[in-house]
Length: 356
Ligand code: BGC
Image (cartoon, rainbow, N blue to C red; front, side, top):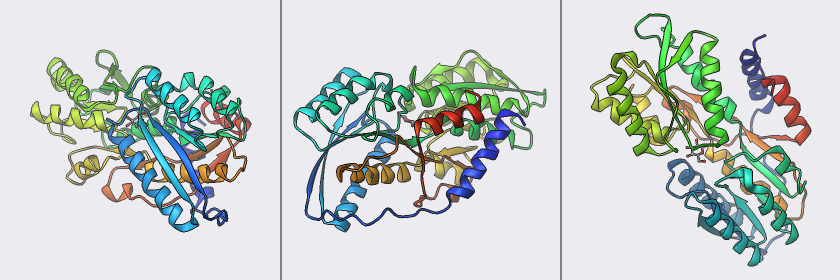
């Protein structure tokens, strides 16, 4: 079986075995007040804004249910690791009970984990996947709640492959595309770029026009990159792959500006299922996106945080699935179960499914 076909089979098995969400056991420690420091890589990011708001809402809900008070202090890392490290060290110095961190640069997470460990403050990492070695530094008290970016890339490639013409609008047997990427070194950006094309290549030949370009998750940059490509390559450009919906929204503006018609003479796929994109899908003004399930990720992050606050040891990985979205109703948010993994289980899966 081809590698990616195997992956799709594995995802299917995951979907059927995971099933519906089983709530965590009742929490008992009533009347406690917990101080939680939340470091967000950057406030100016559509997806992380959805995530952040849902996290705050859900902690409120949990507190109403269990009688505890969860005081959240949020900090904007402004996309600068030095600024964010200072914010996290301040949280540690203030003696917070727990940290939730969406790191600017997860490759530099080790010192932060060690500082937190020295002060006995558990850490929940979110959104940007850390290196496996980071997860081994303080087992039981450090965890990552997230999604597997490879899966979102595969789904992007699949949505184009599943079109009647497989994205080959001019019928020459080759899909010509551009790739708009998130920031350098970001796992989501690297993996979405790689796996979307690998998946599409299983169905049809592809050719990149120019080089993949960094839009750094930003709408205005996405617009600029797409506008330049549209004027440089004209009708040759058949598909725009964007590592996220934010940049894709910019690309849609550029496509409209160039007088091209989405789903007729050009296709576009993104990731996140931002409300604006779901609306465009409903109007046939977008080809496909992938729900980056901020709803389930934030709820699970909060529930795992509560377990850590109660002194429990937890698994290093809590995963949710991405969901392929070509129709608005597929982006509906509902509570789903997560998959817990140890470091060994994760590594075995990577080897078996992706050959990594
Ligand atoms: C999301 C992007 C977001 C980025 C921030 C990614 O997982 O898809 O939209 O900007 O995370 O790290």
